[in-house]
Amino acid sequence: MTSPGGIAGFLVLDWDEAPAELAFSVPFGSILEKLSLELGPLVAANALNESADPDGFKHHKASAFFVFTAVPAIVNVILNYKICVENGLPLHPTAYFDVGDRTSPRKYYPPRFIDEANALFREAIAVARSVYALSPEAPESLERFRTRIPAGLLSFVFTSVRDKYTWRASEPAAVEALAKKLKASVKPALIVGAAHGSLMAGNLLSLYLDCELYFIRYSVFKRRDSEPIVSDRDLAFFGEYADQSVVLFDEDVAGGGTLASFSARLSPLFSLVSTASVLCCAYSPFRPDYTVRLWYE
Image 1 (tube, rainbow, N blue to C red):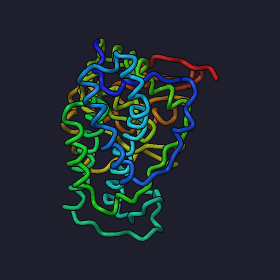
Image 2: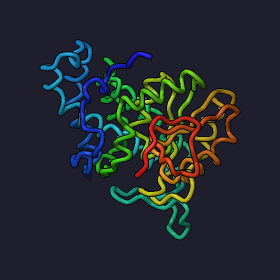
Image 3: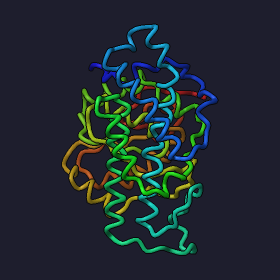
């Protein structure tokens, strides 16, 4: 398997300990503005293969780190926006509402509004992949995406946390190793990642495999979700892949409960299903079908 190039070619970092800069809370609009500024030079450098040039690489190292760690905001914010309008939840720039809490007042969003939110979510995934690939179309795709975002979402705050296992699982070499295993065996048409932890690794994995990508929010530790949040429109999308090979993905398996529950909810929707993670605790009672690195801490 050959590397897709892109952002991975500019990332030579310490993948053992998550950098302090990984922890931040920034308005979505500010992240998009900076991404637009940093992306153009990186796309040009990628086209010239500057990641292979030590001097060129050093010049773009800081920009590449920012792009790599900021791109998850594109999917994160829009996914939670989609969930709010699908479940009649109020929109708030900093709060994540509990979908199962029926004591909170509900809002009415017309079906057209919900359809537009889902279309925007699909576009967010496509833009995130394009940016990670540093494709020539990425700057234009990002700018077009910015114009379609409801103005109120630009003030939403994206919070990134310093999680060493998510960071270790996002190392391009490890993700590529997992992709090689999957491509040799199941050749997936679709990866469904458990958001939000799998956003970085999931985007990379889809590029290495050149397959479609989707995310379902199921964040036990970061969002305290009791189950994967699956909507009717998610189910309609999955119907297109009912008879194709699908990988259910979580970047890291510790106790195994998240990926086990994720699989229990989503596996019945597909006829050909595999589970995968980049990292897996050796003592986990649930072992994914495919993984590449065991840890013993």
